[in-house]
Amino acid sequence: MNMKYDVIVAGGGLTGVAAAVSAARQGMKVLMIEKSGFLGGAACNCLVNPFMVYTGEIDGKTKMISDGIFREILDKLQVLDGLHRNKVTFNEEILKVVLDNMCIEAGVDILFHSYLSGAVCKDGIIESVSVVNKSGTQSYGAKFFVDATGDADLAAMAGCAYQIGRESDGLCQPMTLCFRLSEVDVDTAFRNHDKINALYAQFQKEDKITNPRENVLKFVHMSDGVLHLNSTRIVRKSPINAKDLSDSETEGRRQMMELFTFLKENCEGFENAQILSSAAEIGVRESRMIKGKYTITEQDLLDLTVFDDAITACRYSIDIHSPDGTGTYMHEFKPDEYYTIPYRCFVPSSGAENLLAAGRCISATHEAQSSLRTMPTCACMGQAAGIAAALAVQGGVSAANVDVKKLRKILQDNNAFIGEKRSNEKKETYQ
Ligand SMILES: Cc1cc2nc3c(=O)[nH]c(=O)nc-3n(C[C@H](O)[C@H](O)[C@H](O)COP(=O)(O)OP(=O)(O)OC[C@H]3O[C@@H](n4cnc5c(N)ncnc54)[C@H](O)[C@@H]3O)c2cc1C
Image (cartoon, rainbow, N blue to C red; front, side, top):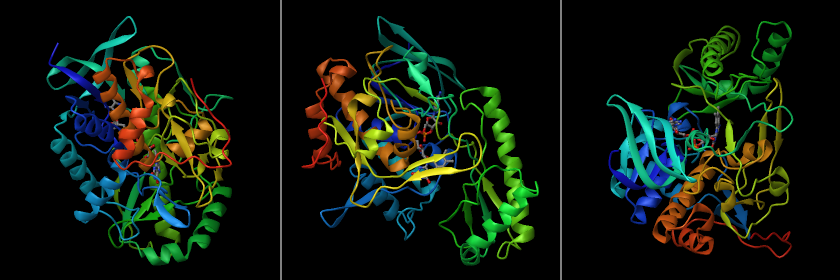
């Protein structure tokens, strides 16, 4: 076995980076394992942009709901000119550098181009993980592990129970290949939003467009003349089945060409459009989620629950892109509404005692996950998981026995927002 670490973080997305940096800042020797050649996860692998809602109105004032390490990332992006004036669109090339620098400064060891391929467990403890890369197959040991792979790969390898997709039929939200068009008259494209969508619907009716998405979903980009499209939709495929995933990549590119041709040939402002880039990987909204000590539900979100063991808050909409085909269900929270996420959702109910899942693969129902999966919230969940991992190592305790009061205090000391008890609160306690 190679060197032994205090904490190994699997996956270098926003969750993983926040976890690794936060654990290292608590004095842990940390290794992060990432299959790509850069950090940032979906933001960089899948060209996901922009950051969804991360502020709210509390007591009449605008407040960061996703604060702490996420605010730090935003500030660092801004300093390097990587944040748009709208404060939500960002340059993922600069994000990669920001995240590199945060890890270097915190002393996190990173293994890029390294695929986590297995876990060795004994008596409910993960002793080591194996990694496949250019050096061959290697094994790394640690006292504690954080699964930030998005797909709960490590939890599954360690034998933890998990669920996938919606309860009724196991279908996940669709996958989407994001892509960008250059040389677009962006103002005209946004001005003609309704016209474009009416024509798109007509083309769908005439079977000239086979993409099941109900409209064209587009966003501004950092660069003038570039349009970001999050508008392909691949349904009824499993993101954890290699063949389904492979077929989805091909179908994503087919839909990209279909949309590009439709826009270029029929819509004002796209006459000179070119395909600038498509994501290196198709975007997966939902896949495995661990079965944790608690599973957060849609009702918890609608009740705006502030849990006793809350570690972050969120007010992004419940936003379910239809797993079957057409349609998107959306419940928007009012500006002064938010819910919280309890620590217990990170703690596997079975399988491994020295493991936390964080990010989009925590214990949640399909409906609840559709809201908490957004990037700002994932960064905040990562911060909590990293500090919790450090507390577990320092105290020699399992994930389930981390001192949550201490965790919440350290989070607050590090500028995280963990929610505030309201007078009309639904009472919620935990063991
Ligand atoms: C199409 C799409 C559109 C979205 N739109 C938005 C949006 O507009 N705004 C928003 O805020 N959020 C959006 N989201 C949600 C958001 O991007 C993700 O939920 C979030 O980035 C998840 O963060 P994460 O760190 O948990 O996982 P990820 O970002 O997926 O990171 C996981 C990391 O682990 C690595 N990894 C995985 N498996 C292994 C392995 N076995 N070995 C080694 N490394 C591994 C991956 O390469 C990756 O870097 C969107 C998601 C998708 C797919």
